[in-house]
Image (cartoon, rainbow over all chains, first blue to last red; front, side):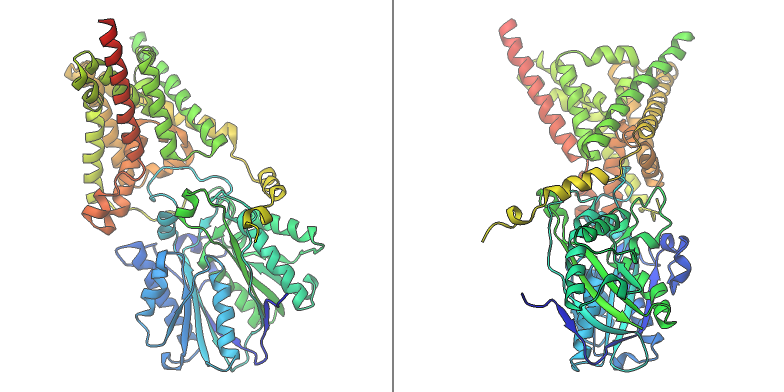
Length: 329
Length: 123
Length: 155
């Protein structure tokens, strides 16, 4: 079996982050950690898609700005979102002079972008790479579900797409949290068909990647201060714990970004989801903890459900994916 | 006077019960709103094609006409009445009877969509 | 190569997920559906009486005018962004009444206006409610034909 884990020798590091989030995210108890909040979902634009795009370009600009670098120092950006043909990321990239590498792995796009940026920087090919991902509730809702104003009920196992974008600048120099390894996941599908229950569809992929990571880095869950999954939600997290304990691992130090981001009440049911979910949670609260060295070593593993509205209508099951990076402060 | 009060009560209970059946279907089968509407509309067509739904309307008034099954009743009853006048009536009668509802839905939706934009959602 | 499905689908896992997945609060959702659905029908009954006594409408005209007013109200509440909030609470109680039909026509029209008036607003108007028209008209034609054929034999 070939290894899925890439070990970095030259310490690619996260030299700055920036997060921007919507009004709902801002109103939750987690809201105070974000760098910037949008007053409303439209962000001054006339459509939600344009708002999402503006969210991306603001995020890219501010990520670079807060690192003290200039846009001319940036070698490339790696970016993706949830919309068809990843238009938000691509259209935001129009505003910048550096090369754009567009990627899509649903909600796991953020850790995928971090991993690929680290690969480029570690290999010495590039010095500064921006990784940005995001999602928008209104645009995702209409692509995957129903019109906003349709009076339908949300089933209790559903999650709420996060409106927000998070960016991270991966650089070759400076005293910052270091990405030490990346584990690329394989697609895992246990046959879940309910598009409202993405946590259940993604948990097996998360388990697969986490087991592989622990094996290949020769570590145990105890070696980490935090195992942070992307957007499994409350139900998905419970399933991951169960799957891991079936394999003999006890992951007490596991937390989920989707569970953290909202005060889980009636409306969000299982918590947040979307490519923006892990990006805004990691880029704000978690990154600050890394800088203060309150977290010394952690796993960030964003999970993705690789479905489309067409595959769901054709009755296909939902394949899951999970990419993980190990970060040390 | 008591007649009218009693009629409101019957409308409330029958209409409420029809919606409760829909909610049972939603809870147990994960049917989405589009499918629920089709199922209830077809139920109305079927019941009226056996001549049953009109008794429910006589009993409960708006309690039976307001739910989408009442729309199915209109379609079926229109076709049945049309069939008495020949093949042409059998084919066109249903839509003719339902034309008020469909026209209103199209025109009002068009006007509303011209004026309003979807709101930001936090629930 | 074996098919992915046969090799990897995990029925035990699917059953486990079903077991622990949270359920809708059955009693409360039914109660809400009953209350809201009943209330909308009471409004319908009020409009009926109003049209009957104030304008002397009766029969098909009364039924048609009543549903037109309800559809207008459904569209308007959708426009103000209120109807979907009612829907989150009431579920079936706001989907099944004719106002729910209006909501299902109006909400995509509003939503897709951003893609233009022809291919957006107008073309997408029936993405949710289209099936009702398709199956409704088809079923009514079927009913009409059956009655017509029966009529040929009984006349």
